[in-house]
Every structure is written in structure tokens, then in C-alpha cells.
Amino acid sequence: MKKIIAAAVAAAFVAPAFAADVTISGETEMTYVSTTGSTDAATNADNVVVVTASEEIDGVTVSTSIVMDQDTVYDGDGGGDGSSLTVTTNGVSLAMGDVSGAMDAVGDYTDMAPAYGGFSADGSDHSFLVTLPAMGSATLYASMSPTTGFDGSTADSTAFGAKMAFTGGEVYFAVQEDTDSKWNSYGAKYSTQGLTVAYEKGADDAGSSADIKYTGIAAKYSMGDIVLGVEQQETKTDGATATVDDTVTFIEYNLGSNVDIYVSSRSSQVSTTADGTTVGIEYAF
Image (tube, rainbow, N blue to C red; front, top):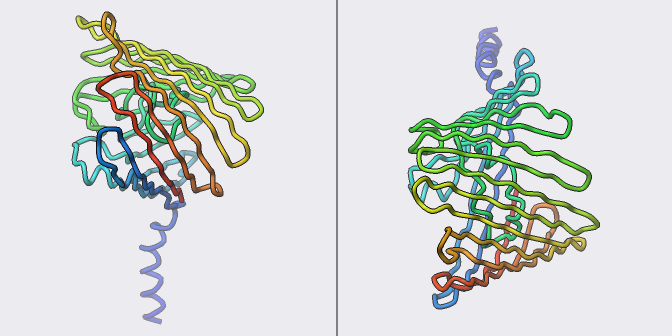
């Protein structure tokens, strides 16, 4: 009887730990990089493990993601680590931690290449993100970070974003403001019969400094497990030559649903940016 009572007491303490739905996911990515004018390099492009738990309590869903990112450990850059806690009720969610800002939560349509490229006016992480339930085909976002935030921020920042779906595609608009800059960006994407095309435009009103303009154009075509694509990104300060003017071409092979093998090449029109080719394999679990 003592053993049974002891087991029951132990179970009473252990059971709550298993009340939540817990999952483990992540990814690892290995690359071989050849850059013009430099020696070749083999790198661990990304190694991340994410532990996610969720539970519903009196109609309120509480979830958390704990991120173990090798880059954060090795780089020690003082930024956030991607971990978060989210509370959702009646379709409205509040995410806290190192989470996407409202500008970061939408768009980035032209970031298609597995290596190089990327639209630079895509916002930043924030400490708090509110997502409102879809109104028709539109979803709204609002976010902020204090001067010292979960995300490693060093200045007060706020953002608002909205996206709206239509048949075959989506459009978005977003703004973000901190003590130094006022950002805005917008874009659209459309897919049909294996072809996806996207366009984005952004600007940084940098106060007394010259404005910075961002443009992204991309397209990809899927043929079964093979994806072919091209991406063009430009960053240009008013009255100056472009600081980013890259064209990226890539081919990707999806080996099952979780493994991607790719070759991505960058050709830059900016003299300070070297051309390069990256061969990589990524496994998500």
C-alpha cells in the first residue's frame, strides 16, 4: 500500500509536466561556398533545435517555443534567441519574446533563393506582436519593442502590417518606426501552374540622412521536385550608386518533404561585393 501511495503522489507531481502537447523540431544545413577572390569554405549554415509546447486552459491557448540556435551560441552577438510565449483567445494572439515584428510578419516575397539575396526592407524582430483575426481575407498585425527588449533591441520601435489574400496570390503593406528611421514596404506575389512571381518595394526615411530605397523582384518555377529560380535585389541611397545590386540564380531539388539540395549563385554589379556560388543540403525535422 505504501508503494501504491508513493506512486500516486509521484504521479500527481509528474502529470502536469505532460499536460501540454510537446514537440521537438529543427533543422541542420551544411554548405560549400566558393567566392571569387577568396578561398573556398565548408560551413554549418544553420543548426537549430526548437522545443514547442502548447496547452488550452479555459478557452485560452498558451504556447511556447524554446529555440536552441548554434549561431546564437557561437556568435554571442547579444541579440534575441527566437524563444517566445504566445497567448491566444477568440482569434486574437499576443506573442512575447524574440518574435517577428509586424513588418517582419508579412511580405519578404522576393526572398526565394536558398542562399544570397533577400529583401532588406522586411522589418525586424520585436518583443511583442499582436495578431488580429482575419477580417475577410485580411490579417492585421501590430508590434513593439522597448529600448531594452526580449529581441535584443536597443531603441524604442513600433510597427504595423497588413496582408490580404486573393485567388492565387497575396498583397501586403507595412510600416516600422524607431528613433532613427521610418520604414515602409509593400509587395505582391502570384502563383499559377507551378510559376510564382513576386515584387516588393521599400524605403527608409532616415531623418536628416538621405533616403534609402529597396527593390526586389523574383520568380521561380516548380517542376515536380525540382525548382528553378531567379532573384534580383537592389539597395540604393538617394544621390548615390547602389550598395546592393545582386542577381541570384538557383536550382533546388526537394528530396522528400524535409530535405533540400541546392546550388545558388550570386552575380553582383557592386565592385565591393564578390560573386559566389553556394552548394548546400538542408534537413528539417
